[in-house]
Structures are given as structure tokens and as C-alpha cells.
View (tube, rainbow, N blue to C red):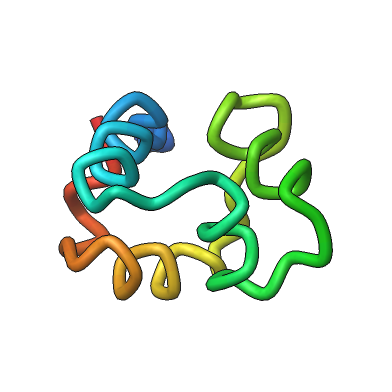
Length: 72
């Protein structure tokens, strides 16, 4: 029998809460993550686009939290 592995979903509400707790704006997050526009970060936090795997370590560093905590 083949076992299916269900991918984990990123908890965007948790990321938003951490950003706000750290008193960071979406513009500041975009700049810290190297995005050219605030919109690129905002769309990720709002779930319109997915955070890319290579962006998660940076997000983890900025928000001072283990990557594992981003997942439901």
C-alpha cells in the first residue's frame, strides 16, 4: 500500500501575529526580505501567493521563531 504524505500548510495568521507583535509593517517586512515592492510580501501574507521554501529561513530569522512554528 502506498502511503500519501499530506503537505503541511503555513499558518499565515500566525505569521501576521508575529509581524505585528514585533511591530513590523508589511513594508518593513518586504524590505527585510529583499522584495522590490510591499505588494510582493503582502500577497504572501494574505495567501494570494505562497511563501517559497527559500524565503522561510529568512522569515524565521526576521521574526525570531523556529520554521516549524509556521506550520499548522
